[in-house]
Structure formats: C-alpha cells, structure tokens
Amino acid sequence: MMDDLRSFNRDDCRQAGIVARNEIRKFVRGKKLYLCIGIVILIWALMTFLPYVFGDGLHGTAGSIFGSYIMWVTLICLLLGVLFAAGTVVSEFEERTALVLFTRPIKKSSIYLGKFLACYAIEALMILIYYLASFLVAVATGGGSMDGFFQSLMLALAYLFAVTGIALLFSSFLKKASTAVILTFVFLLMLFPIIEAVIILNVHGGTWWLLDSLSDTIQTCIPALQTSETGAVHAVRDFFALLVWGLVPGIAGFLIFQRREL
Amino acid sequence: MCLSSESPIEIVNLRKTFGSFTAVDGLTISIKKNSFTGLLGPNGAGKSTTLKVLTHLIDATSGEAYLNGIDVTKSPKAALTGVGTVVETPEFYSYLTPRETMQYIGEIIGLSEESISAQSDEILTKVKMTEWADKRIGTFSKGMRQRIALGQALLGEPSVIILDEPTSGLDPRGMAEIREILKNIRNGTHDLTILMSSHMLHEVSDLCDRIALVNHGKLLMYDEISKITQPTGQRKLTVRTVAAVDDAGLAKIAKLDHVISADRSGTDIGIVLDMAAGDCRSQFFRDLAAADVGVCGLSEEDSLEAAYLSLIKESK
Image 1 (cartoon, rainbow over the protein chains, first blue to last red):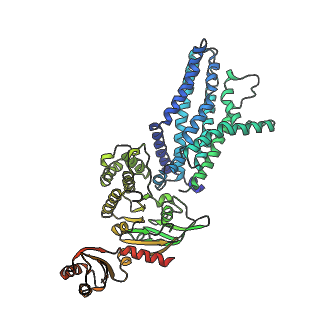
Image 2: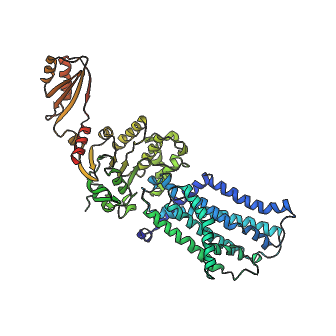
C-alpha cells in the first residue's frame, strides 16, 4: 500500500494533473460551482450592502471592516470543502465511472491526489477572490492600516486544507455522495464543535490544537479584531497545525480508498 | 513462472475469498496468444471476480495474475499498460463527450495529442459513434454507452482486451451491435488476445475460438470451441415434417448415410449424425430432401449448451 506512495514518480504526477484537470472540468460544467459562487457572492453582498440598507453604511477602520467579512470565512471554507470534496471520491464508485478509470494504468494515489488538488484549487480560488473583494471594500471605505491580511488569508487556506482533508476521508468510505456531503457537514458544523466544547470544558488549557480554536486565529490574527480577551496569537504554529488537520484525515482517506474494492 | 510471449494472460493458482466464501479457488489458466476466449460458468462461478482481479478492481487473496508477463497483483500500473478493459456496464463522465472521453483516457495512458486525435476518429467510426462524438454522454442510451466502453478499450491499440459481460443489460439490437463490433475487432490486423466472460452461449459460440469453463472458482476446461462442442463426433438434429412420417418414412431416414439413429415424436424426428469422418451435414440435407418426407423445418441442437450443461453437472 505504502509502496504506491514511495514509488510515486513523474508519470504519476502527470496523471494526477490529468485527473485534476478533468475534475475541474466537472466542476465547471456542473451546478455545484455556480451554487457556491452564488452563496459566496450573497454573503459578500449582504456584508457590503446591508449596512447601507439598515444604517449609514460601512464605518470604522479598514481593519475592522475587513474583519467583519472575515467572520464568515470559516463557514464559507466549510461549505466549499464539503460541497466539492465530500463527493469527489465516492462519486467514482457510486456512478460506476471507477470501472473505466481504475482499470487503466494509473495508480490510485494519482487519482486521489488529482482529486484532492482539483477540489483544493477551486476552493482556494474562491476564498482568494472573497478575500480580495473584501480587502478592496475595506480599503475603499475605511481608513487606517490593514494589518493581518496575508496571515489571515494563509490561515484560511490552511483551514480549507483541513476541511478538504476531512471531507475526503468521509468521501473515501461512504457509499453515496449525498450521504458523504451531509455527514461531513453535520460532523464539522455540529458534532465536532460539541466534542471540542466538551474537551475545552474538561481539559484546562492546552486546547489550542482543536480545529475550532485554530480556525479562530483566522480572525484574531487581524489586529483590529483583537480584544482584551484575545490571548497571544500564534499564527505560524496554528498554520502548521491546520495543515496537520488536513494531512492526517487526507492520508487516512487515501489508505481507505486504496483498499476499497468494487 | 510466466510464458508471456505465448500467454498474454496467465493466471497462476489464483484465490479470492470474501469472508468465508471462496469466489476463486486456485484458478490456473494460460490464455493462448491471439485467441478470443470465452470465459463461461454459472452465476457465482468466479468469472467476474477473476476478471476484476485481472483489471485490478479487487485484490487477490493469493496467487498471481499476469498480463503480458507482468503480475497485476504486484505491479498493476505496468501490467495494465497495453490492456483494454470493459468491466460490466461502466458509466462514463456524463459531462464529457465521447471525443473528450477518448482524450481523457488517451492522456491517462500516455498517448500523444496527435495519436489520440487520429485514434479517436478511427475508433468512433468503428463503434459507430461518429454522429454523437461531440454530444455529452449524459443523454446517451445504455447501448451507446457500451459502444463507447468498447471504443475506449481500443485506445492505444492494446494487445489484450478483457471484457466482462459486454452485452449484459442491452436490448437485442444493442447486443447485436456490440457483437458486430467485437467481430470486427477480432478480424483486425494487429495481435490481439481477447478474454470475455459471458452468460450467453450463442454469443460465445459466435465470437470465440476457445472456451474456458469455470465453476466453484476452479477451471473445468480450457480448449478450442470445436473440441468442446463435438467431443464424440456426433451431431443432434431435429427435423420437422408437415405431417407425422409413417414407419416406412422413418426407416428411410434411418438408412440415410451418416445417420446413427432417428426417433419420431409427433411431427419432429430427432436424428443423430455421425460426424467422425468430417462435417457431413450438407450431404445429409441433400439426401433428406431426396427422401421426400415433407420436411418443413430443421434445427440443430446447441452443442455448446449440451457440453456446458454436461460439464457443469459433472463438476457438482
């Protein structure tokens, strides 16, 4: 099983790229991408225009205005990760396209990597655009400094990586794409926070490594959003911790996918 | 040990278990080069499991399965290079057109752009999908999808093609189309070894030159189809007459050359022909017409079916 990874060579990378390109084509020709774009635009538009509908518009420093947009980033990451990644592996089995792709001279590691890359690339692009659009509004309407933009962006991308890894794990062992999407969503949005809350209540200190705690850093790394209750921000540490959160379930998902039979 | 030059497909002591159920039980077979072999056996005999191991859709519990001399259980990517497959009724990416599907598969197997383009056109013509080459597969019928399945299996001019019930689930027209395509593929010029599992004996006898019969995960027989269907050098025919023949008419038929026996049942006469000296059917038909017993129909017993049922019964 691990031989598959150890002997990964240039041709395997080429094939992973072909799988990724095909996966992106699937997204572009499907409805999911446009649904996600619609949701992200809606969130951005509500944050931008609602203050003008119900008040005097956007006020404050560029940092605080930017921060108000970033409050929704974890939810957007979760939505994107679940919608794109949770169905990507399982659909090959459910729709029986695996009978064509898997019987070709291609390693399962190339297929898995290609799918991971495709999902992550399209999700990351949407987050990047959301950040840029929010940044532009913040700079155009607010004054003062805009510190923490890149730190927050990198942390958001790392969080996205974690969500994608977890979604791929669900996608690797479930039988239906719809079940994988729902379960991943319920797990990340409800069960995981409950488990984390219990851990935080019972373990005093040392819970920074929990996914929810790490995702808070996406906001708290922006100085304008820091309060007296915000402790020291460890952006680099949290960035790598989020990568581990993506890698561990991602690799676990691969091992399950590797063993999965038709 | 593997004799890849003479046996592009070689299975050695293959075993596959699912819990306590043994689907393939020490199967060993060497498929002759350039043959079209039909893999036959009752439901649960281990045909599909064997083909799924060969195409690396499932892992073997033990044993070896070589494709062109490379063990697919150890080096699946290398073993599947130069191999075309159609397993069951595969689905295709509904958002792709047949041409884009060929492009995708062609890129996966490492063909150049020029080669993919040239081969796609040729293959789509061969499988009669030129008209739909640029329409999305999502709207296609099962028969059309199966033709694309056969088409993609031909990409890269494979030396081995593995087919798992390629006409399963198709309507009679779809079956006939697939059979015609397979005949054309078989009659192509380049070296090609085909292994096809099927439940349809007439399909196997129409397309294949060799038969491998499996039951309970074991090989019962692997031989030329003619040797399996005529082991005793006899052929059974049923002649239907306009009215039941009388004793004199029956005796006249029984005395014709090469007739071993003739039995009457209403308007049907069961005849056993002696074919030991060669195919004597045309002479028998002439003699029968000359006997003037009022023949209005004639059918030949499916000898493959008889041999199949006999071998399966013996193996129980």
